Image (cartoon, rainbow, N blue to C red; front, side, top):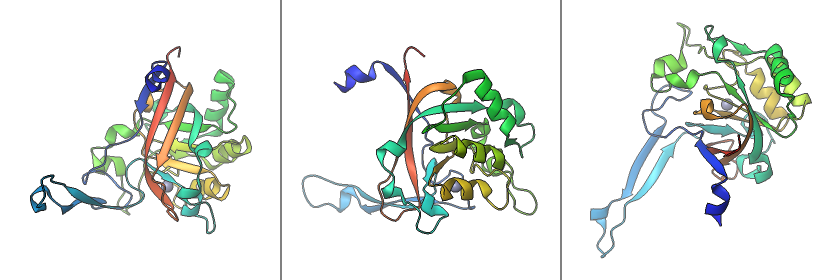
Length: 240
Ligand SMILES: [Zn+2]
């Protein structure tokens, strides 16, 4: 049955692999894979390797729930599947990021609307900046200045206000944060205080059509978690 359904779609994984070398919001290692018990520890016939993960909740490709910034906001386990499965639009600004401080502007969104006439209500907007090409060059991906402030593309505040008014469900971006170089995180504040979510550090966005993919984003179902790594996939109808 599953095979029957899936043959109608191409599947794209929008998720970075996790290991101890990957970039993170803070410097330093954000992930450790520990052996709680190893094969040779086992007396019985069947040997087990059991592991502990030690990780920051906001690691790799991950989701920020409203509770990340908003006291009393929804936590990860309060997001339901209807929130996490969404049609998506991909806005390509790769030709504009000669300036790493680029903010996706209202003009960019309006240009997209003119071209595609999208219905943003209950959709996910994915920003394709091309920044994920630097993922394995941590210094370049973080792009810190001498004060330690990071510089990479994000969203302009007026774009977020506009998308919220249109009823968007969430936003995703291929950088560490949709705030880009905003120092006071207005994009996080606006999205999360409106009960929406944010997905950061996505990859493979270049493989998506600008219109028509269905996105499934699955965080760990952890009560009171404000962030979680996700497995995020796109289903693209073969006709697209
Ligand atoms: Zn965030």
